[in-house]
Length: 595
Ligand SMILES: Nc1ncnc2c1ncn2[C@@H]1O[C@H](COP(=O)(O)OP(=O)(O)O)[C@@H](O)[C@H]1O
Ligand SMILES: [Mg+2]
Image (cartoon, rainbow, N blue to C red; front, side, top):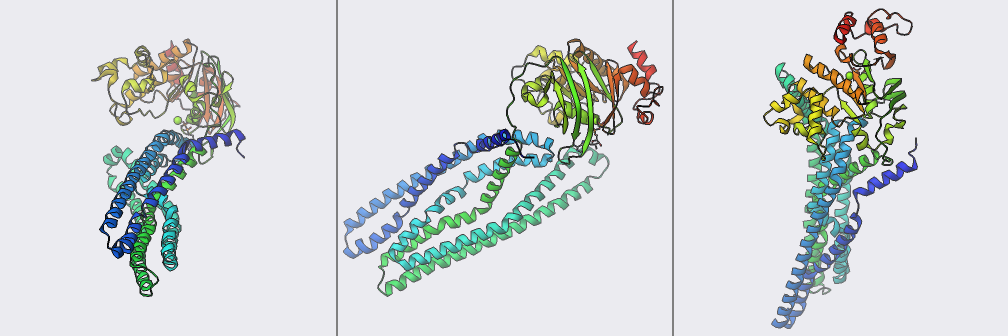
């Protein structure tokens, strides 16, 4: 399907954002390099004048004047050089400032589109690579390259043969550069892929450290890492060898060329076609002409890396461009309508949920039950907009999720994921979702609703306690309840909880029940995925999701009684008894709890 015109424009706009203001700086740097290169002819001209004028005339005065002039010009050149490198460093910083937030944003979105998280993290490194290159020596060399003809012309003016020789040398060196580029391009791609594989393994080992330790397979995990590391190393060595070889060849070539120019100059002088001063001048000018080629070759690796990094950044930014920033809509308050949604896994495209329809109005709660792997979490991902729907729509008050600006939709959405992971920040920041206009009363209200206020104030720094990476300093139950508080913060219209009671004790379950009732009371909608019946006491409707389909949906008591036996052999759900998540005594227990 061809992208719409709107999307194409958005992509163009987002790609342009990366290089805003870059072109005019490039023109400036190019002009500046021109001035520097003209000034760099000073050395050659000085030699020429000293040998051919001062020495032949024997005038000390001329020598003094020439020297003073040369020193002045050298100082100018130095000053311009300093300015140019400072501008380049600032361009790097500016680019970083512009790109880093975009790249980070994109990295957050990437896993939803089927990229691995290691691949997503690469985007951050890409920004570093680009900035590092711009701060180094490479760019000056690149800006000097177009000015090589200036020196060639100068040498040619001294003697056409010398000009031809220098030109041939520059041509040969450039050819070498192109050749090394062609040979390393493919290799660079595979090396990078190998690095991602290696980093993914390292990342997964680090996250599973406790399991590796307890069951003693850390050694084998290291072996797995070692294999990937070796592969990466082998490719890296190959690439480095190639670049090193080309570097050596070009250096040798340059030395030969340097002597060849002197030799040719001497020959021409013997033949009486050239002055002694011109030999030196030609040698100096040709050396200067070839220096940028040399530098460019030396910095080729970082140049290629920076270009690939920038290309990747551009590509991902363009690929994940949103068509248009949606218009602001009034806060949803009426209903949630799920219309025949089909959901596929990002990346693989495998359909995990098909043709599910639900209808909930304000002040009601829905329980979602079904066997493991049936598609409950997939439904939750579609309801929260984490995964896009392949077909069908999820609407709040009539407007599809995509029509809401992300930030304002987020404020109307409370989400407690199945695996709660907290951000490396304080309890307060986690609950308030980094809200800058935070109100302490709202945070306490959310924590109280989640039944965790008392526990938080008992922490050493209360709400200001730092949680550390992924909140691992807390127990699973505590994390889940802070996650619940985060979902309830700001009284969002739609609160979605994916197995919220999996780690809760009796007290936590009571808090959960109260929280669901509170959401209903204030006119919100709660969706609760549950494995244990205790979480379903407060819901009005229940739906059963299995094998990626909605197999039953209706008022709680009807569905639950059929799920526990009596209605199980009804014509609509022939498979229910075996797949039912609840034990047979569920109904009895449930009645007791709600009584
Ligand atoms: N990111 C994913 N990519 C591909 N398949 C997935 C992904 N997440 C879940 N699945 C598959 O989707 C099916 C439903 O998973 P899920 O919705 O998590 O089940 P439930 O929450 O009901 O236990 C499972 O077969 C699972 O393997
Ligand atoms: Mg699940």
